[in-house]
Length: 74
Length: 565
Image 1 (cartoon, rainbow over the protein chains, first blue to last red):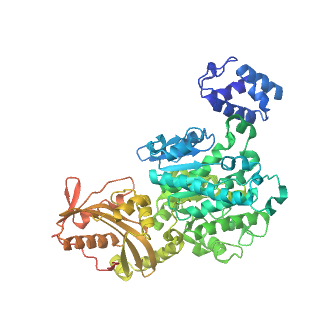
Image 2: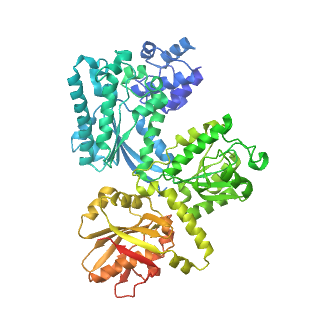
Image 3: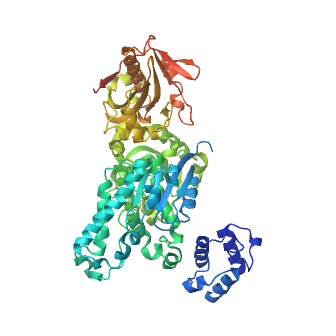
């Protein structure tokens, strides 16, 4: 799952795979802005064929949270 | 990449439109257009439009998309439009229509930009439910009224179009296009997933504005216009009309017929025995397209790329104005490889999708549909007769004499300006300078005493070719300078250019002008005009071609010129 996820993140933010880790967040990734984040969530929903609740989306502050939320849905 | 067209697009919205600019750039790049965009700050469209020195105007957009949405325009009335009285609702409608119209007017006044205004999506819910329609000015009716009134107000505005946003939502479905999470998170009113479809719809206006529309559809026959192979299945064995597969081809043909009736030329490019195939076209009871609907027919065993080149030559249109439909992927690959200018449609395997494939194309959009555009089919039929006539007479001079060509010269006025501008925008072959002019510019030339701007309507024994020639001349004291001189490709080779230039020179002489000067600006496509000045007797002086009015002027006896004063 993580591999798929990191690939999507790298595509949406247009950054290298090795620049992504569990602690990646808007604080340390310039490319992570609020709009791009919505694009990311949209791509993840398509890729994993699921739909997240808004409150789960709002809890995501870094990549680690993202992994947690996804594992809840698949 | 030097021949990439340039375009400046302004995007003004009442909600978050992030991502639209990038999508525009991508789509434009794929069509060989170098596009720059300006997107207004979040909901800053009013300031951008009303302040004359705004960064929006500094950007100098050529096309501006003003995308307002129904929640924004209705405000709280979106939830309950009945909390104000009938009268207030009716005043509200007038007010909103005025607001929108004034925004459009400001843009066209403060800039040269064309404006595309989105209409409003009809609300699918009303608190009154099925009774919404029974109420005086129900919620849906308010929006219908606003949409209708805006549409009617701009019907005559040549620089303004409505983008049917409601149609876009109908096509893809509100449940898909509107995503509540994204709306609550970032005031996004077109779901991110549909940005691509949205911008694709807007690209219709880009195609039309830049005049890069396609003019001709070239069609294969077997398994493209009917099901099956006539050479194998026989006249009675092909599928056309009476079964599910046959109906899909009838539907496709009906769509094609409607396009041809509005000016898109149809042609056939098929590998077949001529007699077998033409019999279906002439005699099959369910054939919708008739022989006369095709302006050019190639049914033979030649290479299809070769046929396409011939079709382009016979119809006198560029290969890049042609769309090719063929069910056979091998033929498609061949054409893509050998004639890359032709736009090849990758038809789906399933013929039930053919009609849809055609109706989702944006390649046929034109900005200003003139009488000439709609009359095209008739004109090309007449053209076909001319070619047959020409083949009958082997002496070209005699053919020209027998054509009874008449040229009517008209000044630029309200009736001719749209067509004049259109010709400057899209004429590539016989065009000495290829200067592109919008209607506004043509209008200002026509009001300038030191300019001559006229167009030529060319008729002959087979019919009216419509307005097919344009010239713009800048008058100076002792000399006239040819700024623009062009002929539509369909009348090249009839000596019309020589007759027009003679007429111009004679007139100059009468006004005691000593010299006529012109330049030829070479492009990839205007080779047919390359030798024009030289063959007419102009002499090269530095960058200019110069004609001394004391020189003998070529006379063109077989063409009669009528000047409308």
